[in-house]
Image (cartoon, rainbow, N blue to C red):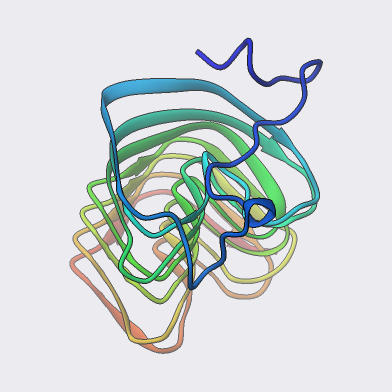
Length: 212
């Protein structure tokens, strides 16, 4: 219970392994954070800073955790679990709930994924004021497998997808599905908004997709 740690009157949650603490996308937190099926709530952040979430830069393994987030502001890389999942990092068996907003690369699990995300569910509503928004990640150049989006994904720009907004860098996205509404401008899709360098297989989407 984070109600005594952060909130609209108490102030923002400070991400573990934040940029202010000296972490970066090539030097993220390492180790194992095992939630043991516990829930963290409410994770409150209203900030124009980027790389916001429970973790800022995650390079270790985060697993078996549910995070209910209330994140807003005009920064990039906002997500419930990790703003940036570094190469070699992994997020597994995690669930995101609540509402997550930002400028770009906004998602439920990780704003940007350079590692591996598996067996995760997003049920949070996601909104990008610019673009690159997805239920699981905003931008993927790492692997995603056995993931589900059930939240509403919206963006005022392009690259809006049910699972990932943008997929590149040879990323693989497999065995995942979307059951949430997707609305944006330009490139939008039930699974990915744009696939430019990677593969998508054994995935499906059942809700509406609109490009306005």
